Length: 264
Image (tube, rainbow, N blue to C red; front, top):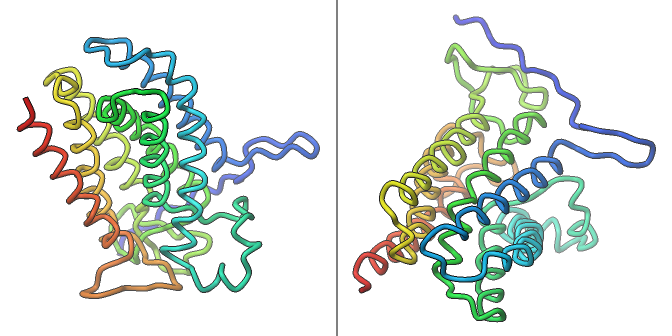
């Protein structure tokens, strides 16, 4: 038997000033969006320049709405439709938790398409920049999941297993940290290498396709260690909802990569 690592109890409230309460979860979204925006601006100013970089100042508002609205509706529709449809007012209570990345991703895809159409910006070059910056937000989001002690892993006896406050007495995989590493750090390094070492932005759609494929693979692997949601459990063939939702994302990524490489 290995000694169990104590879960570092951290107050989910990062800052409290009278009625103003800022939680780590909200702070992670803010830092991820601002960090992604600044990095996207840096990329947009580098050759090849496909559009006026200042347009990203407006796009960040669209992206924020896409993340929040899409993430919430994705959780409602993909994970707990019966619960929320029986009490629709609960859908608006986002401070109680309940966001889905795949929904947020769809929200940003819609926001990117509408923004590009409205501002006459080439869609795939914009999508490449957005996807290159996306791992920044993913990293901070998973760290916030860990701080909240939510979305913990399956029971395990690995030396680094932890007993999570809401996960019962069994030591578990700190799967949030696995996902922060795969979906955040590793994916960001891969996107950065494509952009700077392989000049992938010269082939519009290649970076976006690599992101969709890479995230889908990382999420599929991460779900092998993550405890499925109690209200869903395991689905067909022992898969989880996160894995099933990642399959079309990987397929889209493969199609985009093929399109970008074949396009003159």
